[in-house]
Length: 604
Image 1 (cartoon, rainbow, N blue to C red):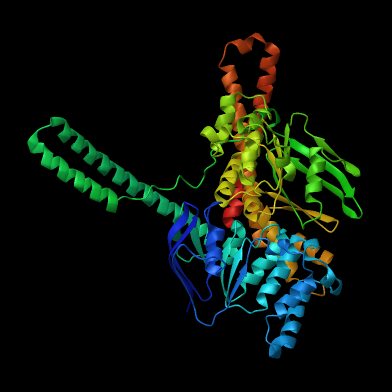
Image 2 (cartoon, rainbow, N blue to C red; image 1 turned 45 degrees about the vertical axis):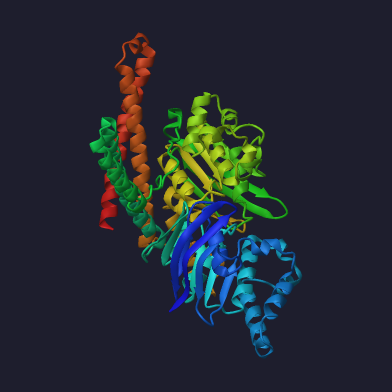
């Protein structure tokens, strides 16, 4: 059954067209993920479909006698109401005959969401983002809608709350349209993807996992569009050249041919022109470089770190990060993730414990408040030049790779959006020759394309990375270790984010009578086939990066030996020969370990 059908929808802001010709159908049980770059009009489309705004053109047909639930961005952030007032407003829409039953149902739902009796008199603005999201969803569900429209429901939620929302929606039989930049969430929730970009709307075939299959289908579409556009341009240019040649003769017999060919060209351009294809999926094309001085050994060692404010955040946190290692730091909001990263960066002192860095390591720290460090009065180019001693043309090149090019690079920082300022901060980061990146929520305010591109940059980076993020897709792609912090407890999981997710799902599936600590310890210690495969995959990738670094350094030394001047210094020659021999031994050992790990992975 069709719940919603819209045809030829148009949206304008003043004289600027946001989109037009938008057509699609929402059927029962479908869960649609609506994606697209920032500013493409996703929220505007949702408001049209929810009926809070009227389209400039086109039509929307909703199934008769069906109810729609609409959750706008940050709806609970904008009210000063208490939780009780939210409950009262929801029950005010309920007929008197159903009031008692619905009140009991709403109270039970809020109890299940973790709200206590004392919470009902608190203003919603005092709750965490996750609590506000749960309260808003409960308020929405009391009407028992047949389909729901949710605009960025995962914004500012910690991973545990996003996982709860993910499970709720995946097990719900109703239809959904969801705007989200959380690709991990879309893969597990959506059954189909709609895309809105550059005023054009694309509907993709149902597939699972939805976002990953969408990327494959989108890339095939873009390749076909490029081929069609190239064919069109070649044919158009050929016809234009023919017309120009006939015009050059200036003979009366050629005049009728010129007019005829001009009309044919006009008809072709009006009816057969292929749309100019998208620029591509990876818009940020740059490589982060790490200094070769720290190409082996450890990046840093943390020993017995502890921090407390009113209550202890964490204690006795002890771990190492090797050069080239990828560490994800996860946990609920307020658990101390950003505090730990500040301690590692030296911005904050630990109450107990110490951090020891490799003396050769250069550290770059990207804080959540990094945007506040930008001088809004200077140009984007000058902002990058302030970060490192590089040439202006190099700064412009970095910004250009961040999609801030031409005249835009000369605009003051204050004229850019939050997402654009984050790109400027990333360009500043790239201007530095760092061996260790400490990143705190680097994908905040970035659209999906920018997140994909940033991940590609970090994936190719050869230094060490410690990252705090709620973006599980990024953590899955980049991490080979996960440090989790929760309620003062902590643990280290080998095998990357997939291994951590497996541990959490085992904990959630544990019998209710088992204590949380016991459940976590059992789940962490159990080597399931999934966990073993994840650990081996991460190990193979880590060894491959190490072999690549060793080969690169060997090539550098061999290139030095190819020059004559090096032999004037016998001490340097001896040191380089010793290093080269050590590199060869380490490379041989690494290759042996890599082959054994690969064989084990293939057996599994």
